[in-house]
Length: 116
Image (cartoon, rainbow, N blue to C red):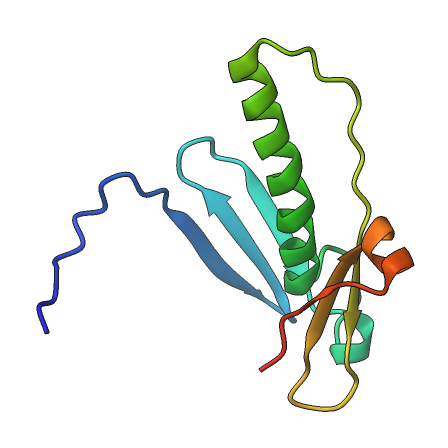
């Protein structure tokens, strides 16, 4: 097996720091934007910010919208308002599993199981 050296080309650095009391921050190296997280109430947190798995759900919805917007831009289409509601359900027994689904998928009984 050949191991390639990571040259960090075409990569974006996200610096994650533990702030104490189950709070973290993630800083985007290119824009300087910062996102804070807090453990959810059912995991000893205060639930004051996004939980890390909330960001996973947010990533799914915003990624789909961004892909649609990029394609519309490339084709010269005017894109109207797009809204995607992503729901996250966590199992209560360990190891915890995460199920993500959109409102349309929920109506059809579909979802993405991110379990272990």
